[in-house]
Length: 104
Picture 1 (tube, one colour):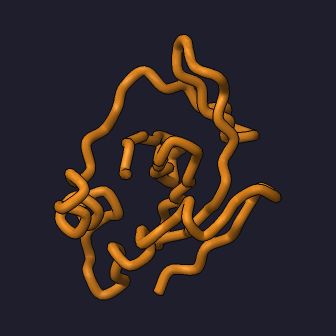
Picture 2 (cartoon, rainbow, N blue to C red; picture 1 turned 45 degrees about the horizontal axis):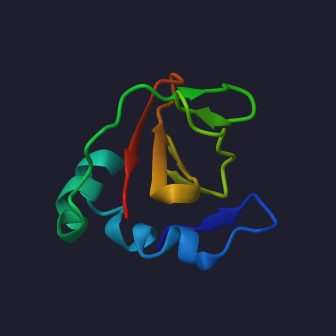
Picture 3 (cartoon, rainbow, N blue to C red; picture 1 turned 30 degrees about the horizontal axis):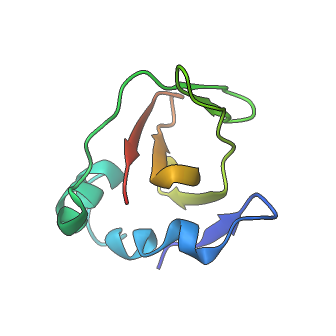
């Protein structure tokens, strides 16, 4: 099972839900591919474009919306997975690139 680190005092297990259960260290695929297949009932992993993430604080911004602070973090091999309000999940690669998707 993937460990979850809660980053914000208001973060609750409900924010993360079953996301860690959709990842397996025994599966060589990256997190987004595992999420896409294993979270199929919720729609899978479909990147949302237009988000900007601060490289240091990981605050996420989308035009017209208030900024989102990360609530929880999971580490999966070389990837970092951040969970935000509104069921937004960000996967950050070792090189700093990232994708965001809504997984509700």
